[in-house]
Image (tube, rainbow, N blue to C red; front, side, top):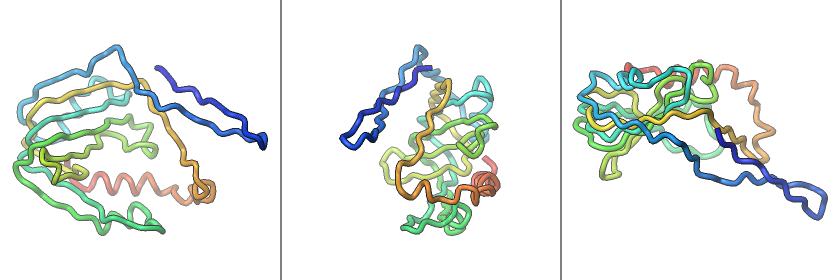
Length: 185
């Protein structure tokens, strides 16, 4: 796994500013491309992932017969907690959507940092329809899978982050699970 190294530059006051260069990740492996016949449910994509203990990116150029999408309402500061914000979400069940579904399959031990399991978003070919995919059936198209050796976690560098009450987020796992699993996939 290649890692971007931080560089520190001294300032006139003896402080350091840290810069992490943004680099494209390269891999020796091309994504696996699998044409897939219609799946009964989106969750079937998970069975095509080679190992449950690695991060896997998925891209599905497909037609979905009946996707159910979630679109949270835009917020302004002060932001509400995840579970509270999701109570006002818009859910829409569509028919015959053609577009690109992007997602990440994360290992179970990373629940909280990421959403364990399959987490997906979709945008249609016109760019006019999109959102978080809660469920989808009759999905057919070309599936691309790329395995990753790890993730990079960047913490916020703002005045708000050190003051955030992150211990109050102890129930975050339950909130994430409630928000992400309210529909069968």
